[in-house]
Length: 321
Image (cartoon, rainbow, N blue to C red; front, side, top):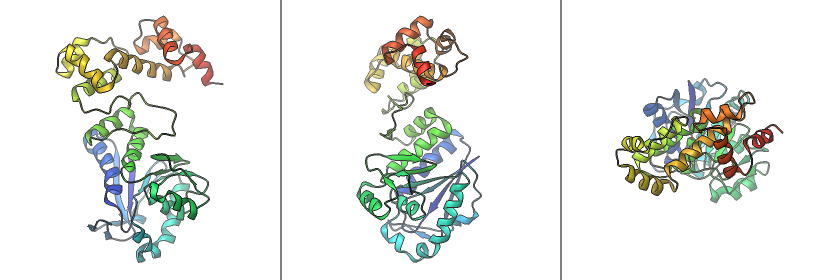
């Protein structure tokens, strides 16, 4: 069981809190992910920046966290930093945050929650981000932090920070991808009707998330099947039946939704799997080709060279150099 604890501070912004919380709620309740979602605070009652009040909140000190668990701190209005409860409780809270980080808990922030992490000293020497309006202020007040203003979120040494408001959802989906895989993250993104956006600093792109920024459920079902069954032969008629449409309509709609054909998408999935398998030195090129659904090693080599401008063997060697 993985604990994901939301520490709710005075004058918290609703979407900064609710967006990431909804991501993990969907993963837990709709897809049975083993998440223990906790909401705690500095005081039993918290007034939100938008005027609502949360009550009967447990103290953050009641949490029992382990290595690999998460603490998420949503952004708060500037008045929250000046509040009496924050001023009084912050020294002990900062010490607690640092103790959690030392034992391997991952500390995350949304929007101006980065200022809380900076005040606790958790951003010293680390790359981080916050809302674009607050980036310069974060840089000026905390020069030891390596503030980045051109990304949605950053992960550095078990400290995760995200930019403004909706990017908290992007960070949550990225965490979900870490914990449960890219396919489930894509499913949850569809469930809450948002696009999967990438960091922008990461060179690695995910085929499991690309081509998913559409709302055609039939096409998603076909994509899910292709991802889960890369070694199987693709029959267009059977895929069309799965999507509850004709073969002709699937061909047209798949390209409209993704920008590639069914065959091209299937090939990309197989090449992605091949990339993972090639990292195993015990597998021959022939064995990799068979596991990925290619006709033979020759087909794998041809498609690989077309995609990556080198042979599978050359790529494998480059990964161990």
